[in-house]
Length: 126
Image 1 (spheres, rainbow, N blue to C red):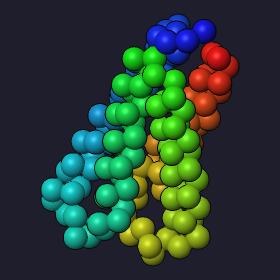
Image 2: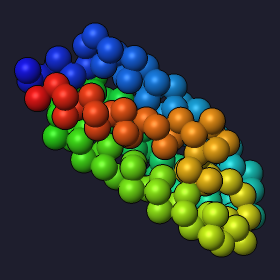
Image 3: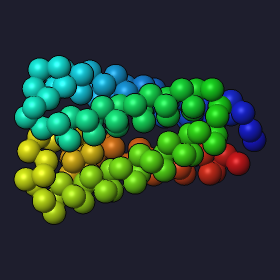
């Protein structure tokens, strides 16, 4: 299957969850950057980056753009694994939590599970 099929059926749930995460992470990052960026510029910038990735994924899945969705899922998975590992190994480097800190523990580990589910869905729908 190709095209919009990736955003249909159960794929709609992924679109919805990514949309919610885009809004939640984006709003949180915007407030943090606007009000206390000097406290943790790296953490807040990473949260904004995560929100941007979620926006890209939401749009890519909704439009059926498999290549873009695969690339964004790969970036998301790499981000959550790298930031999660670094935040656990060196907590002082992240004085404030990001969306991906502790592998998404502040979001019930959904940021870790989402790219795995997304990649599974995208690769399964080939």
